[in-house]
Length: 384
Length: 198
Image 1 (cartoon, rainbow over the protein chains, first blue to last red):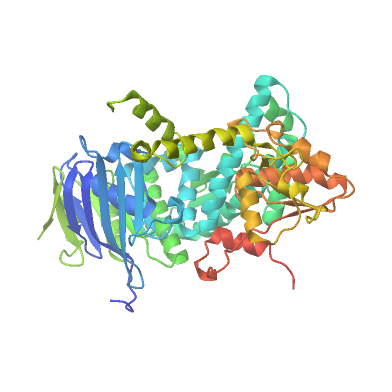
Image 2: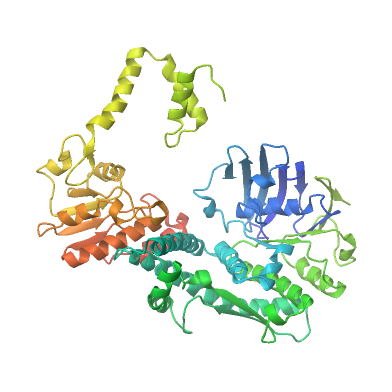
């Protein structure tokens, strides 16, 4: 079917020994795919499997061994992804428990590194756990930026991975110095220089991201919440910066900041400036979300953030992302659910889990394009 | 797992300690050895011991060698004004295969990694600085293109520059025979960074 431009979709998946799915095969529609069932039947596990094909891991913080079915020795996932250009890709993930080993194959060949897969089949996930993006600490918001930017830019992902390594090495030097009290001259400087090189690129990219993201989040918020509330997003850099700085400017400032904090760093045995201390400030009508927002505002903002992530990635990526919505309707009123569904209907492939089939009402026309599945005790069957 | 022979079990355990050899491969190799004629196995065992007994480090470049100084350091054909610094003996072999480089080497024995307890003291850094005298015109740093290699490059540059020697690093970038369009973004951006004027 090459030549007909469309949205990237996952056309089918096979789960073998994956959590409670011993052998499940699913043929997806290219629009909304709804997975209905009681709690604990295996709806989320299906989205988790999709996440494995795209991100090489679960969107939950679970290890590979935990998703292997109870009593099983290995899981095996296989999916067919059809790119925007209509090219078919067979993606397979197989993982054994003893020894713990994960194999990732795209069209039968392993990628150079797992990191090379990130961004090839982009995905946006909205799950109850994501609540921590608006409620939780800065680490959650950094994770949000990293997951979005890594799927858009391989260079960014590379910088993040290298920065983390350089940071660990530098922290070790500072920690050793604190316990032993000796820091030979010239030992920490190379790591500081590396940290500054990677860190300045990361911070510059994140600042740009926050600026670009602003219009996306505004549009997304308006699409589910027409009332006159104004969401805002601001990048708070983990070191002194000035607006309008380029990468070199960032590097000079991070370098100066580290220099100034050197005595304190030695005392505490930790790196105290850099993008590992970044945050995003989220606001509604210029008020801090973390401190002032209501439960409803939190949830609405979270959904808006994810819709914005979707539209941001769609704009910047040559593949249309898949959108995975895990149990998101439970705390939202009917009007908002309706608007989200209307919005989702205009996107590429969307996968939704819910215990409440009635939320769809008449908003979705089921058939070949939009499909409904019943999930029960580790099985999944399409409903008419 | 239980084997019927303790000797066999011991051999399998020794083999499975080798890099890239898992338990199954170790078992296969051990059983293969069991089937070989005794002379062949003795020859192999001797080769193993010889490696430890005969090989030492060259007092000049710190590479592994049987005679000191090593064949490269002793050769009158090599250009003594250039020293190429590498992490491991493997890297010397790789560079020698190119048949391009006619200078001298210096093997550091690794790269800086505080997490693994490797600081400048654990590497042959002092030995390198001792070698850099007025006869040496250039030091080429050929570390691995990773975070630790990068830090080592920066560290050595800071030490060598004040000695008045020319310090260079090998280019990072695209593999020969590769297509530009298939290069990953990180490699491509490093290649752009390290572009040369024509």
